[in-house]
Image (cartoon, rainbow, N blue to C red):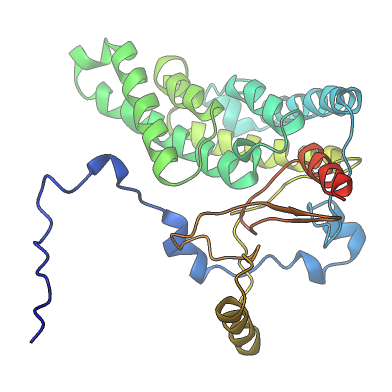
Length: 294
């Protein structure tokens, strides 16, 4: 009789807390529908960032600088002009424009391939920052001694915002400034800061969709870089059969498995995981390498 070795249950010493990871997308993505852009007329879907199977063409930094100049000017100007002409905003002493939108403009019109610049990060990050900042300011106002320490409230609001964005995959660096300003500079605005920030996000993203899709592509994705398309049953069976019968790694491997992701460069072909986003310049470089393989 062969005795199977007994494995001791894991102890507290075997648990590495530094490797704990919470991926909110793993819980949300199965319930989210795929973007409908492919069903829209091409002139409309083009300005929503949809390119089908056509990768965006690489452009030089002079073109990037030109459109960033136009986009940042128009985006900041439109946000400020609209906010100035909303009577309820002015009645509650709202600023002409929340200063952190200057940093948002840098991401939205210059570093448009960055995950920090995608719509989910902008809207959720900025909106959460304004809510957290105002809430912390209101809580500190309940205590006269605490209300006299705006530097502590601002630091706490910024810290909570940073942690929230890290957990929810919505990191947007300018949002840290929004939370800080909500406590230290825009306390009198109160909860009206939330619609001010939300309106600013919608306006600056609208300008970004128009300007950035002239010669580039924006956004890279709307919610997640993972594919939200539901595979058909026959497609699922064929993929399972291919994985079992082939030793060649598949570029569409499930990103939630423990299999390491990889980029495969073959002669005249580049295979990448579906959830890996790269800029047009990076893709062009990889394609050049594939063309040099003999």
